[in-house]
Image 1 (tube, rainbow, N blue to C red):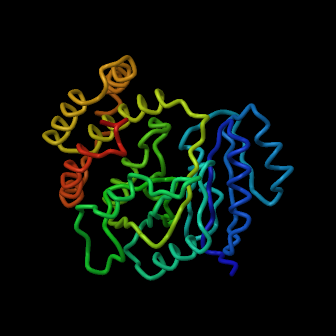
Image 2 (cartoon, rainbow, N blue to C red):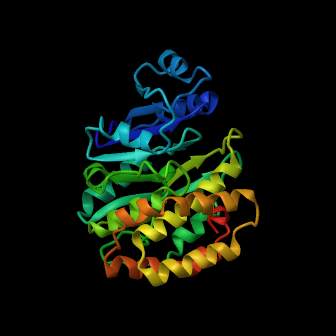
Length: 298
């Protein structure tokens, strides 16, 4: 069942065992997709291990940690109409890539498909899945699933051309909720994002992670996205909500300080989304406030 419509893109940094496990799983997929890995400056022998164990994988070595921009670097090499992202500690289930490509083939206005996430080793649903399934965003009747206001890079297939035209992941955001800005720009370009409950991605969270930095960057990136794309009133409202609800610690203080220090850049690049896109973002505010899966962003 070789399927030539989708390329899988992975970024990694010092997670050699997890990456090799993911590549083993991807190699077993019936779709046999091309896989591109961007090694973001690993120092644990990741690159040499990939070359040794998975010589067919296209390996990019920028020599430093580019964060999410490592995905942009890989997408430049993609020659298929669709690109599937996954993390080095997650992998697509058999048939999921083909299923997402079928949906994108069938619906010309669909920009991305996000799959259900099962957390391993127990196979339980990630808490974010219920939010995706119950998304309050209204969509057109032709949309094959719930309309989304954003997506999860570790579990999403996108149109390659739409990703490129939207500019990919912004280099300032690095990692931590970096999808929100790109999702808004995709919507502003006229694309719809959807969730597909019958497609699956498996995620076995790596123990190699800096949770404090991820939370700090997530808060900062939420502020930047809000200031870059939301009208003044909603932007102020969300900023005040974050200030009231994030943990009162050094990480949160640094996140606000970093965000505020970049205000000249934010104002120079500020581009408010069209009213229909803002209406979707406003509908998501309540679920974001009560989310059990987005605590690091407030």
